[in-house]
Length: 222
Image 1 (cartoon, one colour):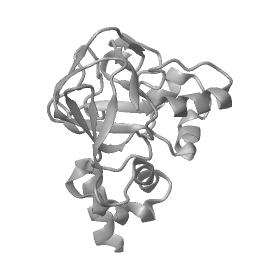
Image 2 (tube, rainbow, N blue to C red):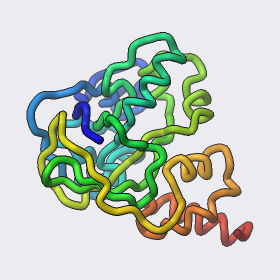
Image 3 (cartoon, rainbow, N blue to C red):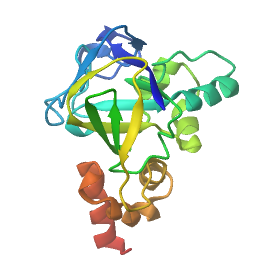
């Protein structure tokens, strides 16, 4: 398991951007050399966990629980075959493009060591938005991405440090529940009756999703 690329984006104007000033940082490109990774601060204040990476709509993106976004190269390859087009590393706006790692099959709370220093913890899957659809330029993209159910993973920074392309990725902790990123994604998109199952992940789950799962259980039961 390894890191194929580390991808950063600049704030750029785009007709599909719904962030302040009509700018977005979704167009992320691989960079050479080490990149510093650290907790950026609370959502709404902190942006990306990667130095030099732009997050433009802070009320929905970035912050400690969405500090880093990872996508498996294997999932990008599947989309290449389906869409009939090349998708470069970073094409989905991911910070980390991985190889040999089942990102959407990762457990909430699973921890990865990336390179010799950095430790990241899985918190949730990525929910597609209009900006993502505009960036890809594919009709009905939000629906198609949702139906596939392989959203990639958001991660929080447990141990800061530097990472670079080629770094090994090691799973250093797997929690004792069965709540995967893919299950969590289905629970908040297409199968909301699954929401109570997310509670098994506890505080490792993105706090907004944990609150949603608790409210659903209180209203409808398990």
